[in-house]
Image (cartoon, rainbow, N blue to C red; front, side, top):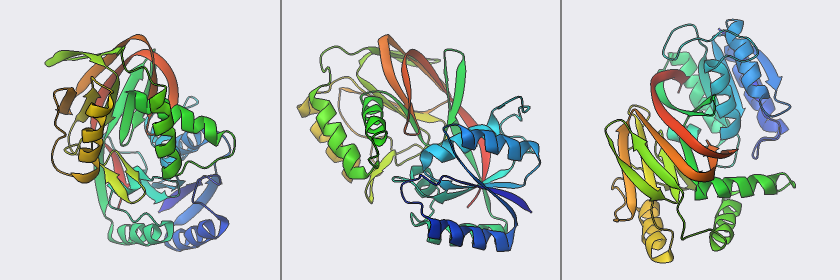
Length: 319
C-alpha cells in the first residue's frame, strides 16, 4: 500500500519528536512518502498530486485547516488535475492524525486527541482494513466551491475566527482560551440591532433577521478544551446538514443558549429566537451587506450569498 503523509510543521501541537514517531510507525506499515506543507493551499495541491499518482492513502498530521485543504485536494480539481466525482472509486482514503488546537474532525471520528495514541488507532485500522464512509458539506459562493468536514458559519462566529487568525498572524497560538477571550471581547463590539441574513431553501420556510448561522456536518461543533459544544446535537456524517441561526444577540438570549450547548449533548437548544434545521440537502444564506464567512475554522472573507449542500458518502476514512 502506497501512502503519502502530509505534515504541517507549524501546527499547534506538532513537534519534531511526534513527527519522527509517526513517520517510523507508518513507514513500517506502508510504503510511505513524506511531504511538509509550506504555504496556505499547499496541502490541497499535494493531496491532488497523490490522487493523480494513484496513492492508496493520504495521511495528515496537522490541524483542522490542513485536513480541510487535504480533503479538498482529494475531491476538487487542483492545477489541472482531473476531478473524481464524490462517492466514486479511485480516490485515496484519508488518515487523520490530530496536530492542531481543537482537532474537531479527528475527535468527531472517535480518534484520541493525542497524536501518538491516534497513530496507534489508525495503525489498527490499517491492519484490520477498517474504513468509514463519511458525508461532507459543500459551500458555493461567487463561482467558488469548497468542501467542509465539520462546520461552516456566517456572522458572529466567523468574525471571531477572523479575529483569532489576525492574532495568529502576530505569532500567537490559537488556543481554546484565546478563542473564548476573543469571542467575549468581540461580542462587546458586535452590532446587536441590525441583523443582515436571510435563510431560504427548497421546502424550507424563509427565515429573516439572522445575526449568526452555524452550519454543521457533524456534532460537536467545536471543543472548549476537553468540553464538547453541541449547538446542533443531531448532526452526523451520515445525515444532511444542520443549522442553528440566532435572531437575537442580547445577553438574555445568549446566556441560556451557551449553557445548553455546553451541558446538553442530545437535546436541541430551545428558544423562540432560534432558527433550526436538521438533515437538509441544501439551503442558502443571503445578506443585505457583506457578512463574515468561515469554513472548518478557516476565515474566507465577507460575502452576501453562500449556498450550502450535503454530499453523502464523499470520503473514505481509515479509522
